[in-house]
Amino acid sequence: MTSADDALDRVVAAMGGLETGARVVVAMSGGVDSSATAAALVALGYQVVGITLKLYDAPASRLGACCAGVDIHDARRVAAGLDMPHYVLDYEQRFQSAVIDDFADSYLAGETPNPCVRCNQTVKFEDLLGRARELGAQALVTGHYARWRLGPDGAELHQGADSGRDQSYFLFATRPEQLAFLRFPLGGLDKDATRALAARFDLAVAQKPDSQDICFVPEGSYAAFIDKLRPAARQPGDIVDQSGNVLGRHAGVAGFTVGQRRGLGLGGGEALYVLRLEPESNQLVVGPPDALERQSFSIRNCNWLAPLEGPLEVKVRSTSPPLPARIERRNGGAEVVPDNPEPGIAPGQACVAYRDGRLLGGGWIER
Image (cartoon, rainbow, N blue to C red; front, side, top):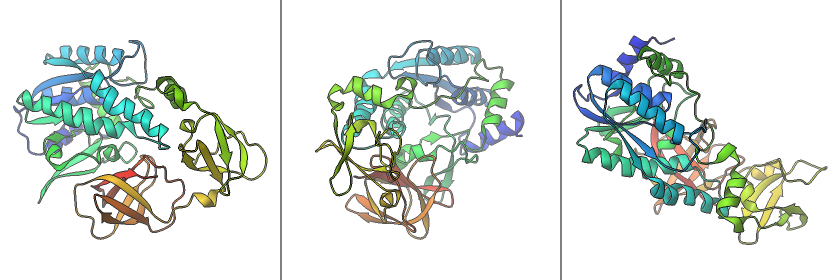
């Protein structure tokens, strides 16, 4: 197990040569990761300014989320204990338009969105990063488990040392000029080492549970959340096979995702999976598991941080194993060709490319 002293040494190394005494802004969510990050940087002699974003309206007692009422209170308490300046910025309107509305509209379009990527892409690494610059900071620091390295051509992003905690997938849309201003001090640590740091500095959140599911979706019920935000989405329709034969009825395509088996209500017979969501006709197309396999797929709105030549791997979900593949860039998008057919490619999810642990970039999977 990594000791607190060893963890501090790794934090120093992860700051990428940014000298102690420099002013940095730490994005403080109120959880143990960002709190331990702030405490470590204060102890190392950085001028730390904490900023917490109020992103959505949630009960102050709600646990298992981030950026909710209880988390803002925890962030304030940690900052006060560290005797560092701390600000709470109300970004609810921006978060609503850039993340929550996008989340709902993606489901209505037959996609399975990833709001955590969108939040990093817009609110955190666009708006908050700009505010950090205005405050005269030399870096925006977060508690993500990813590694920042300075390579021959500038800043590089690599997977976190702890593969079970790696969050680089959610950072694929970070642009090069943003990456140069970011630092991820926890990238070389595992969760136990982070908690050891938090305990060393006697932080009240040292044993706080990790956030679960999507922060703004109560109890993880995506379908109920979409129903409330977009009532028109709850339109019943047909469940059909690949030939168009009606097999049953669904209560709204927004409640399903590609590769889903449970909840179809078809009963008996062979196992059937969701192959496609067709919101235009309000149909759910189902079929056998082998029909899920894709020889290739397209991605859009790509962001590339490194060349794509040579062998590489892609992840098509944050929790999926990497797949050997090649990528052919085309008119702002790209075609991804896995070495072996891959089942359950879900439109709206991120496809992220790596080589030897370095994040190369990625894009959004198209229908």
